[in-house]
Amino acid sequence: MPARQPRLTGDQRRAMAEVLAQRYDEGASIRSLAVEFGRSYGLVQRLLAEAGVEFRARGGADPSSPMTRAERESEAPTDDSRDAPEQPREPDEAAEMVTEEQLAKAEAKARRATNRLSKALRARAKLTKANSSKKQRRAAKKKVANRRLKSEKAADRLERIREQLDAHTGH
Image (tube, one colour):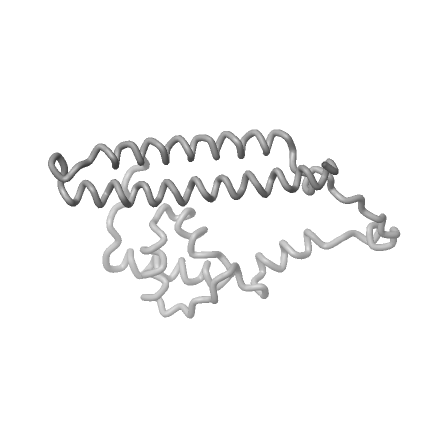
């Protein structure tokens, strides 16, 4: 774990807030500033608020910031690529086709979920009013409900994968 930074007070705090405000106005994100200065996200946000910064909307850097503009320009296509005719793209079979490996993983996950549900049901059945508290029985009941949900979800996913595989292979 990194060493803890000293507490900011007085002039140091104001100076840090000014530097952070300037960098934020240039387009840096709060998260990137926190990493850069080795401070927490919350502290950076508080310092920016203390400096009177008007926060941007969530969802990324300001599109008009110099940093974002430079990134857009570096990603712009070259003149050669704009003149070339666009090649028709073949569908990506790997993205569309469900593989046997995915089916095997889904089967294993469904099997594990069913086994965990069975185990929770057995544990709940062992709890009788004589040897367990109401709290224990409620917890066991809740656990069974959660495991049943997960088991059903895994079974549904397995069924969808099997249907996709059958549709692709034509069975």
